[in-house]
Length: 181
Image (cartoon, rainbow, N blue to C red; front, side, top):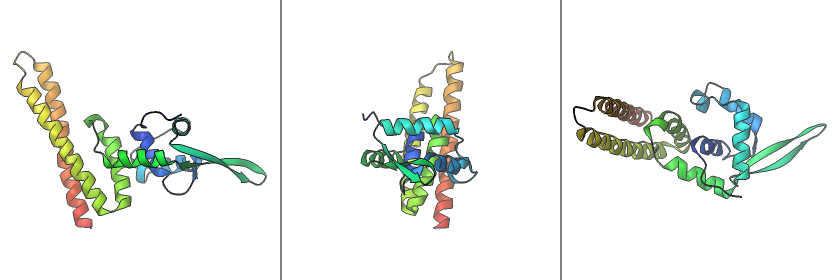
């Protein structure tokens, strides 16, 4: 049974499975190390296994049992074509909401860096455009508020300052990546 597109964390897991078949314990080991995606996400083993089961049940992953002599067989996970498509679509799209930026964009940046400088530059530029649109929308909403709505002004001001900080970081990101290429 194939369900709707997987969520951001699930898509990142699909990205980790793009290479050779991998078992869940190995994936968990990669995520608990303070390097690569382990710097961004902290995922309990039970949660990882539940996500992988959902991805397999949804048709984004397939599994085979790998015999290991006297030891119990190991379940090896591989992407299906729909899993590859879901990952590619997610990786290319800018993050849709500011609240998801820290976890999702940094994962997308990780995978784009694996593809090379062109993919990174394209991702950063798409995200800058999305953030600029978010900021314009917040400013338009704020312009329509009256002085009798101080709480709403504060909320929109806070959200605007977050997007401005993201845009400033994306500028830094672009400059660092350009200098390193």
